[in-house]
Image (cartoon, rainbow, N blue to C red; front, side, top):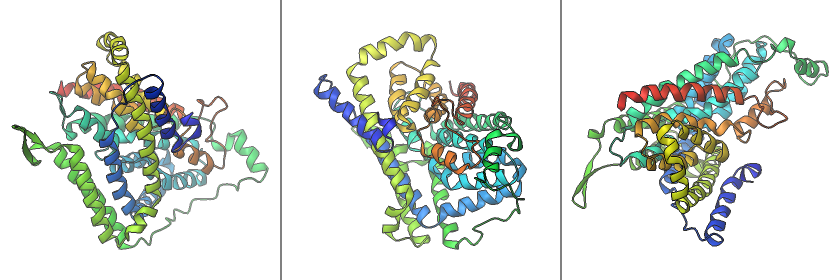
Length: 429
């Protein structure tokens, strides 16, 4: 019901589920994913400040410049740039301004737009598994940080980053051979004959938006400097302060570090970008962040309540399976992401289960790319936007819901990245 309603409806239906479990079935309410919510607030505040300063427009300008410089390689460049941007910014929402660029370059070159569009959109769902500032990554580090075999942020990225990157490349190669070439596509020819779309014109290579204010460049620079600081400090625990708590020495957690740095980055971006506080709240990313918070609150709370109330049945029933086939949890993470359309909700639901089952932290880290299952159902804004942007009709939502343009690249990336990450995780076992 939540997926059908969409947006904040996902979280609101989750909250109704908690209400029913508590009042009808007598289950104690589960933990609210407060850490993940706080991380989203901090990261989105910084990203929104950068957007208000024109920093995202500057990034799009750079992406457009690269793509238009090699238009024939758009099937490969577009997904790779999407991967880099989404991993760096910690949000898949940065793909929205890239979609028109990808479509225009591919169409004007006579390339079937579905190929780069569908791969890029799918990649935006997986890239957060390789992002040091994504809410889902912070949630994972927070959940596994107290384990005896806990990994640093740098070690996690060594496992996930190359794996997702390889999955992206393989998906781009596979997707470049999908469907008819544009000149042979019957639906495109029908629209062209009916005058619903203009014929492709030669790509002039002209890059729009070249006059980017220097404040936008500075804002983007400050944001990614903050990301770099988080990566460096998260990779080397000895750089973090330690404290005596109840007679025990504790190191500053990555979650706390991420929140502090990102809020400080947001303030710095406002100054160098000359952004007023109200403009940060009006930025489109702020709305997206609030939607993500409500969705995460309802769905993760519902899952925590259900699992906590049925821990013996759920965990007991999966223990033997997980011991014999620990990869089963990766499928669970993929399906949880598909059902909730939220990477953070999937991580907060399935990773505690994996910890309870005794699965090693490096193995759990290798499962993180599976949260790209958010692209399984055509319920994401980026999917719907890509379909609307593609006037050729090549990018589509299928009649049977699951047979949409983004399904194949989603499955390819998952099938390639998870086993690759498992191989890399053996370095830390």
